[in-house]
Image (cartoon, rainbow, N blue to C red; front, top):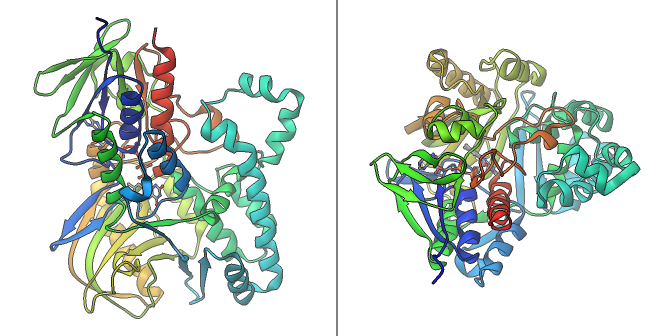
Length: 490
Ligand SMILES: Cc1cc2nc3c(=O)[nH]c(=O)nc-3n(C[C@H](O)[C@H](O)[C@H](O)COP(=O)(O)OP(=O)(O)OC[C@H]3O[C@@H](n4cnc5c(N)ncnc54)[C@H](O)[C@@H]3O)c2cc1C
């Protein structure tokens, strides 16, 4: 009787879990080894003062990605998680006291922008969204749902139309430049420029192609009952139902093999043999020698790093500002903020601060008194250098100053910080960079690391590789890694 093929997946983040599901459906006996005690990776829960926080992403987009993952496995996404579309996408505040809410309802947003910046800017926003839809239509096939394209594959697919296509996706100017042309009000340029940070990038360096994120967001932002950790639990449950063996608290120490990957050695010394190994991480992990010499040879080197973050899970009484679920408090000087983060690898003196008021998701009444606030500022990916620790206290004080300027006073009862060094320790070889290489320059999407490595049998999956960062994109990456491994199987 033919031996059943085996796969080992290192890491139970969204990409690792998705790869495990599809490899199991493809007939493999799949073992997932995960260092932490539960699934999710960056989709992480923290308990502070007895209250559970979402300490990574708090919402998800591209719902169809998860529906398809479940449907392909003969399961029902809606039966596995309770979700609700966010009506208010985010509340934005500027140092001058002005505020703007964006809504899922397009007409409401247009009215809000008209009241905020005038009817011409509301029309500019409509035109901006229309262009973002065109960009999305162009890139969805080749850049999001397919294998990583190359210049050669695009030329083969588009021929002489390629140059026109690259112009249509607005890849030859930066987001910042395109937004400056689109909007007269610099606050709107700043608001939509911030979307570059969703993939750890700078709006001053990212191609305007990333403006498609505004369109994706308009298609639906989803809240999860019980927090987004419940989404990771649901995908882990799907994997288990498909026969995947999920082993928590197991650290992979090395990829085995010489001319091809033949398994994984755990830190305990146990060796798991495999025909296919999927590592739920990026090239930085391989190149940084965190998985032994065989893995190191499989990567050409560590790529550039995207943004890290300094986050706080705070139980606090909030006063002086009408918090929504998602709140963004902008810095007065965006160019200076990104020059500090990317140019000088230091924290900005005036950071933009994101606050997720997690008790205001509408699934339960807002508590009287102290509430759960998840607070985030962007940080340089320098979690593996000594200088990083010295900057943390000052960085946190600057974040509090940004909030205070907008009138938000916090009486913090308990708080836990997560620093770039903590992220660097959890996601090795990254320095705490959370999104793989930044999307900078027009070729960035073509240069993203592929799911297939140089070593036969070894694949990468997750937000650090093609097609990109974020909960749905990492899931797509895992599916692509599995499909590639299945197609490569001799
Ligand atoms: C603070 C924060 C906010 C974010 N906000 C958003 C957002 O709003 N929207 C959005 O879409 N995305 C957001 N993201 C990004 C999103 O969470 C990630 O892109 C995505 O979850 C990454 O998934 P992944 O598949 O790359 O796996 P990861 O989440 O990177 O998980 C990898 C897993 O591998 C495990 N592992 C690594 N090495 C080993 C080893 N040697 N042995 C065993 N296990 C190992 C790790 O413990 C981890 O569990 C955010 C991320 C963070 C941190």
